[in-house]
Image (tube, rainbow, N blue to C red; front, side, top):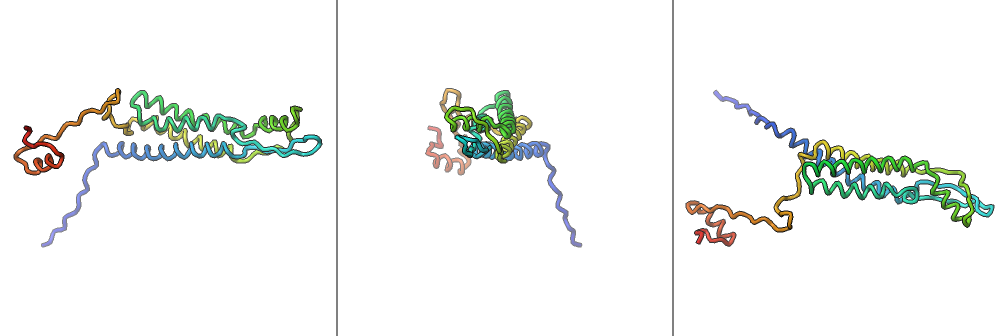
Length: 213
């Protein structure tokens, strides 16, 4: 009689779930943080608002880029990108502080972008410059969708910061092979068992004397 042996699944260890969640959150945080910083920087270089001013009795079209409206999103995008990298260089309390900075950078980008979406002060300043210092109002004011794109970039950075706060303790850190003074820690040579030929051959391949002489 033939017996069919059923495959018994191996039980999952208790650490598999947290480890998998840590790897998944790390991948999402890196992707969203880097993408958010790139989106925010790109959006600040685009046209956020436009309008028409009257200069010497003639209509004069004006436009303002995001960097003309506010410099906060671009500055915080750089801070957030630096914080995203620094998360892996620190541990424990330092990692928590850097993660909080990352989240605050994203929130600041989103808030500044949304406030700048309806700001006409940059166009008013350009209208004054175009009229030779005479105050000139801008009419037919309109804004583009780029401020909201910058806000989305800030939201992605905020997501990366929140993930770092929640799961950062499970993420790897930079190698501790180097001491704080910059000197490398000496590596221990593997113990060579003279009764094992494979250990002797490996020691010879490393350029070591297997006899210990």
